[in-house]
Amino acid sequence: MNEQAIYRHLRELRDHFTPPPGFTWPEINGGTLVMTMRPRPRHQLTASEVRDLIKPQLPAGMGAYEATDTDDDSLGKLRIPDVLICSRAAMDTDEPLDPAKSSSPSRSSHPRTPATTTRKNPATTPPWASPTT
Image (cartoon, rainbow, N blue to C red; front, side):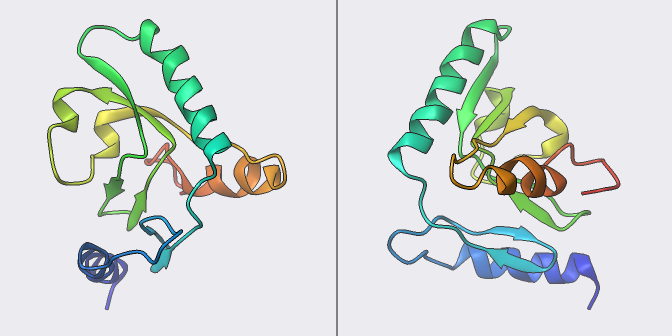
């Protein structure tokens, strides 16, 4: 089974999965479902503040959205960035967004684990076309 087939299988599993209480919907990376604890209120506050700072700077038709699924079948990755900038039209779907049609994904850093956010996550978060992802 190649990486894309594994990814598609994981996507199907994820579509029928309900996270246990206190956990987020899983991301997909490296042929694995990756689950984390639900963000704390302070984390969500930071994401909201970033969104609110960005929003007035965006051109008409664009928005800053929180916790939106993005995936790239060819790379076998599904991510849920804290804040994502894309067109309002792109958000009118029930499917994950195509990362090529969005920009500036952002993750908030936790003060107790900044190394995870600042070193580990960017290596597996867009830009999607990067050979390092």
